[in-house]
Image (cartoon, rainbow, N blue to C red; front, top):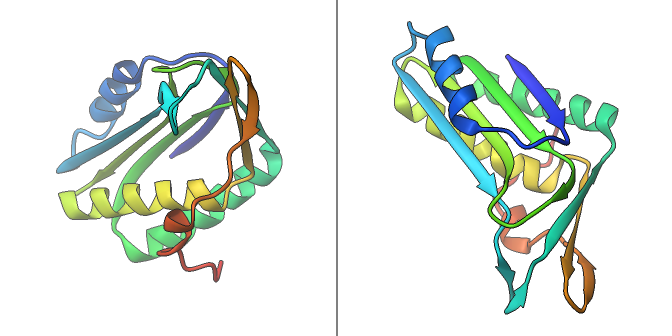
Length: 149
């Protein structure tokens, strides 16, 4: 059970393979990879600057995970989230979840990603050829979240 913040690129398959081997007694391994899109609303993205308040993000993510672990029977999880300058097609986030049954892993992973989008202290600025713009939370990301943490 691990949460990692890093500036460096990561190769998702290395982490997924090791995680799967470490959880050989689990019946399901769920993985999600979030990447930088090359466009946003017809603007070509050159890069994204991701800032975080690491201590607060750790606390928030642990709270989220503790809440989700009360809902779902999870054997293990791994969260990697990059910060700094990230370019299109590069990985931003990796979530890997082990459980005995697939639905538990799917739901845990999906809800964790939803929470990361709206609750964790990350700030993203998209950089374009003609300027930059801070990314705002989307209402659609906030609609299904229970903010009672």
